Length: 114
Image (cartoon, rainbow, N blue to C red):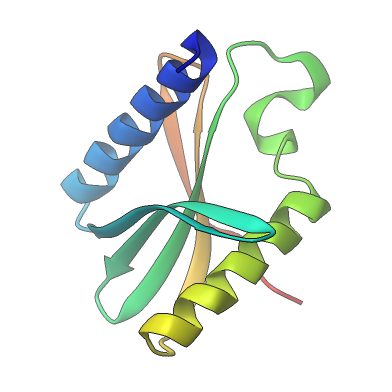
């Protein structure tokens, strides 16, 4: 594992802890399908929450929020559709947890599928 991967894993673990502390339940981590991956799948009541965790220690190119491009959103939506097909359709939303390496920001409904 590279140093970058280790930092990413640590950010995902910290994001999961933060979400649990705020009432969500983590039900799966790093769900992968061909063409997409979801960092965290959580439950918020009856809603399935697909969470993208972004760590950017530098603000080049707009930082963590700007790194969730339209192409990245399409890959997340693709993976979410696969997850829902396997586990059952439920109301869902896409959240993001953004970090600069020290602080974390949770954005509910970061984007919506078209």
